[in-house]
Length: 110
Length: 110
DNA sequence: TTATTTCAGGACAATAGTTGTCCAAATCTA
DNA sequence: TAGATTTGGACAACTATTGTCCTGAAATAA
Image (cartoon, rainbow over all chains, first blue to last red; front, side):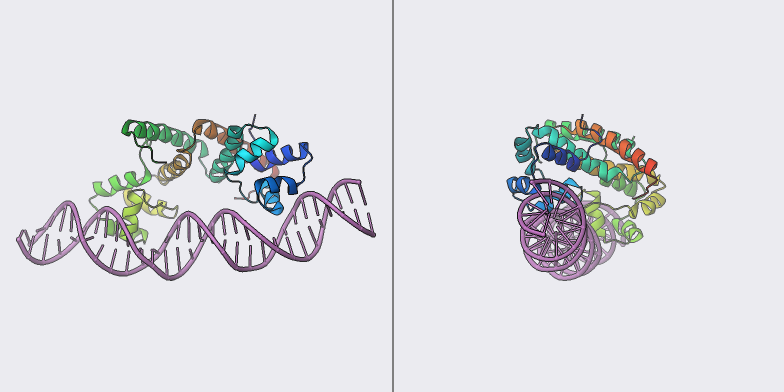
């Protein structure tokens, strides 16, 4: 579903489907149009405050948008690694472990 | 193998096994002992230049150390997400896709 | 115990990275 | 052509990271 598409490409398509100019969407996000242009082209990064606004604007799931955004960031971080799959695997185990650890301790440090 | 252990915890164990003080290892890394202390306790991050030095010092695989370091970073980034596994899955696909894309284009932008 | 060494942790400036903002040129559209 | 949209650069403001130093606590040795 969301695979292979960068966050920027995704929201650009959504915007063009609705025939909205950068200006309009940028206004809704309270950012400069040129910044939105850069986000769409991957030259700058979106942030999480934008997700509910974009989800609302384009009738998309906020969680899905967040998934695309975060996976983009991870993919970008690991692109240049020689063993990205292994890194992801170990990271997954660490997350499981840490979540469980935090649960057992009742700690909630985010 | 490397799972569940943070990079800092890992190198602390290695250092203590060899009964080396922070001072010595820090000198080998050309950093302040207090910085190394912080790295071991996860208060600061190690960087990749340190990997070959640590690998040499502790007779460990540099690739393995890098794996522990990078998986730490990814795990930390995704800890607070509600759907980390999904994010990792999509990220994996994106990496595959991007690598293939770059190969086909013959581009090598790292 | 006292002296010495190691380690933790804070402070702070220097550096690096990110973000907001504006502007001008290029591209597209009517 | 005229107007709107988009791109891309520049740059200051802000935020995060890093290097460095210092002090006190804790551990170790004498």
